[in-house]
Amino acid sequence: MHRSLNPDQAVAHWTEQLIANGYCVIPGLLPVGDIEKLDGDLAGDFERTPFCRGGFYGERTKRFGRLLARSPQAERIVRHELVLGVVRSVLSPWCDTIQLNLSQALALHPGAPPQLPHRDQDMWRGSVGEVEYLVNVMWPFTRYTAENGATVVWPNSHGRKALDREPPADKFAAELEPGSALVFLGSTLHGAGGNSSSEVRRGAIVSYCLGWLKPYENQWLAYPPEVARRFSPELAALVGYAQHRPNLGNFEGQCPSILLQGKVPARIGAIDALRPDQAELVAEFVRTQDWTGRAAA
Ligand SMILES: O=C(O)CCC(=O)C(=O)O
Ligand SMILES: [Fe+2]
Image 1 (tube, helix red, strand yellow):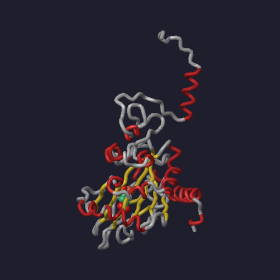
Image 2: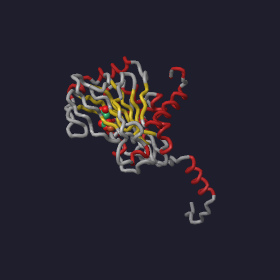
Image 3: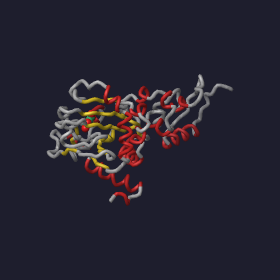
Image 4: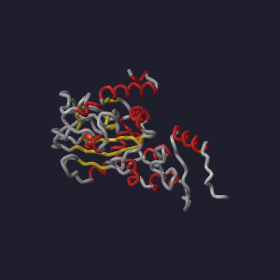
């Protein structure tokens, strides 16, 4: 049905679903072959990464981040155009630009108990019920079934409902096929299901947040300049080589993407990076300023 939607209509359609219900499952986003390649590139990491420790991550799970440094295929999921369109339309009321919050591969092994139901926005201590801080995207590499621990989602638990003491009664296991994705808000109650099957549930979580927040995964350490230098400008901006106007995340007062060019000057000099409304305010102030205290040239 959605094949008939043009890209803008598709963004509007899925944004509406996401905002109305707190989640949506988008089918057929990528060819299964792309997902298989990504899963294959990460096979050694899935094998050799130790199991997590702690009751939240879960001791029958393995997780590792920095997917963009581990597989060239990771950009396919991180920069998926429809997903980015949806994320931008959900988060743009509160920020100038979005940023990558994390890219994390996750294997849920047989015997993993269900995860604590939680809201990912609780990693920050901002106001609840007024702001959406992040959008999460779960990309399955294997099939996700109720039996192998498909993510459990509480529909309509988002936004102001995050203030309710009791969660809504209804929840469901988001069964997914590779190539599709589960998209949900930072305010939506969810958690990994329990894996009572004999198979490993593998996938990746990619999340995006307001460009002025501290991201969950330290993106500048995950992708230092010598790594980010190989990224497209769009990808580099998504992992933090961009300023969030006004002037946030700068390097020596300029856009940190300056570090991805050839030679970085020893002394750089700061340049305003303001939103248009702020630039106008400042320009007007400077224009009408009657300043006689200037030292003689
Ligand atoms: O593995 C899942 O299905 C969900 C994991 C999750 O929500 C988390 O780790 O924050
Ligand atoms: Fe979560």
